[in-house]
Picture 1 (cartoon, rainbow, N blue to C red):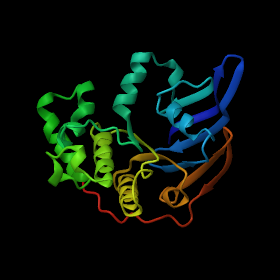
Picture 2: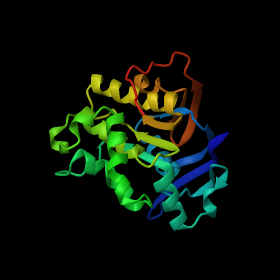
Picture 3: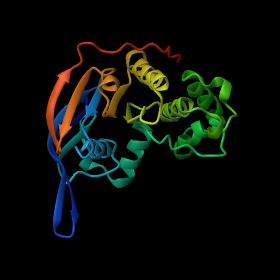
Length: 239
């Protein structure tokens, strides 16, 4: 079953009379439980595509179905609820709150949920421990390494048990060892927990943790391929 289906997706930006086509007729689908990598050079449209798939921006035209339902049928409030409950985001810049503990950072998405506040600490501890940061619960981001910050970002993305995790250049600010650890965690979430993962990257070695790679060029799909020599997930993921 496909969790994401887009057909003839287009996104244009206008600056006066000048039109820039960021996406120009993109069609593909993502199976539930798949790990998909989207690659492309700067300006290829991959970040725009991520924002559309993540319901952070609207397409100019074309169709986008999530769980079989066209997102154009949702109201703004319904879209916000869908994004908050079904999607998790991991960004290159971490986007953590400074002077706030690991535990409090992980709990942040629960503020906008209907999860009873008495359950927040237990949920946060569970996801923080799952990414190997149980010993850092009360440390602040300034006391964490780059790899630990990204692990915390993953924990925060997991806390509402999303259907899809979007990872936008998650290893971009990390050294090679930390980057491999982050990709192993994401791959473990896909293989062991069945999470659908959509990865945006420009690095072939990072993309090869996925099952399939779509390459964008100038807003269109330039190629699509299955990963025949997939990288292995070395890091252990504990639920």
